[in-house]
Image 1 (cartoon, one colour):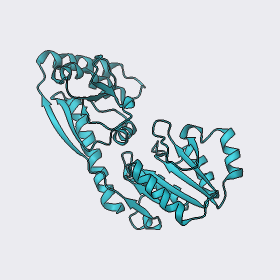
Image 2 (tube, rainbow, N blue to C red):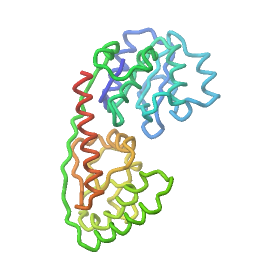
Image 3 (cartoon, one colour):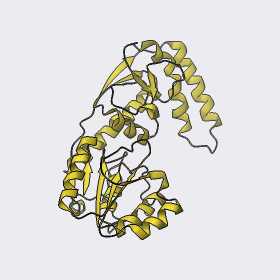
Image 4 (cartoon, rainbow, N blue to C red):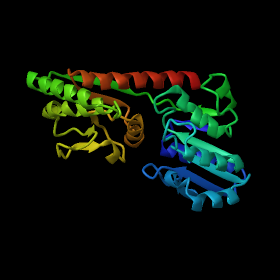
Length: 286
């Protein structure tokens, strides 16, 4: 069973209901450290990072059986469907009689990400298949849609910041060589912060890639661990950091600070496209 969009109290309710209807001898919960929470059940909690460790791997292969329940909680951490951790987790799943998969959002950024969850639920019977609306009917999928929205706040940029940006852009392009080309937008995006910082308000919380300006009301994406409302000072480059933030903050509507420098609009458009992809996936899995 794949459960999309559940908050903690929903997950606890799903688990209690499942346990009341099935004969379970042992429960194993797999979850990233940052997200791991107590489901108020008698279970062994195993960090995502430990799934591949020998001390867990061989023991769990001996212990897990048809009376075991595996709870795979927020474990879609990479878009690589053949990731080593996923493969180890599949070994556990193949031996288990029961599995529940919780994932707040159905993708990281692409519709085929959902097939990672589908693999877990179907014991990888269709591991090489791409997303197909008819194929995923093989799974029991319960969806609570997370209805997100963005509101762009435009900031005019003075000429000196634009000139600084153009100079840095030329420098980065001329020295890129064989390095990861993503270093260019990542570095250029930081330049716009010097203008955005002038527009923050003391009584608002903001989320940014780092707190280079040392403001008490700016959090980094990885620092957010509990629900609150944040204005997006700048987006993270990696979508997984944003999806983690969404799960932790439980926020649905976001204001986005955006200057008229091209890289700012590039990142904002990138996340609007991400949002459109998310909505498209919801329409196809329900």
